[in-house]
Image 1 (cartoon, helix red, strand yellow):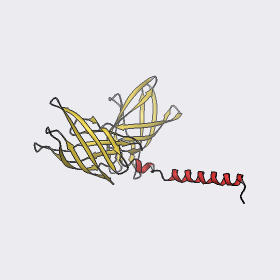
Image 2: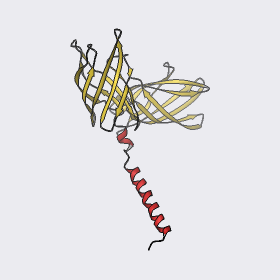
Image 3: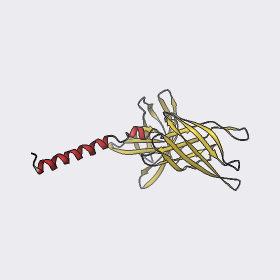
Image 4: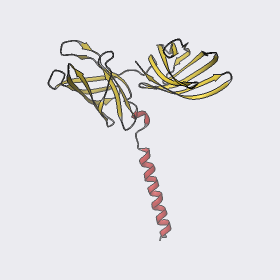
Length: 242
């Protein structure tokens, strides 16, 4: 017969094993982030004009956020956003000619495609349309911004990058002027971006090496800085601006 101590010990081990098992069934981070990124589709307006709207989505495992635009300079935050691992839904609210236009998107995520429907009252009454959005590739091409402390100031840095095969070129500029050419820029098959900068800030010479991974509209990694032989490693997080 087991002693009360052994019985309690066995029950404790069983509970620990159960908790451990429950933890291993959680959704992997790679799956949680598969909705992250830029999604585009083609839509024909009621007047016959064809547009190519775009939505940026970011999911952190619990909350879905993002912004949508149907043409340049019309970026609007999404609201009422939900994602359960397969079904995604959100709405976009805009003002048009003193009228509140609400457009609701809902669909099923399947790889790099979301298929579902759009419901909108932009004609004065709610109408429904098919929706098929495709995920744009995660590449460094485009404009990225981040902030960096230089001296006692927070400075906004802008990077404009171009991609040719796996070669990355472009310019990184503080305060959107001047700046330095991207050197040794490469976009690796595993999704990593690496490049170097060399130049001056005032009279101080520096070299920086950047390493980051692109997930949707975020570039996350590190900057390795060498200023006069003093080397530091800094966290780097850039956001896609366009």
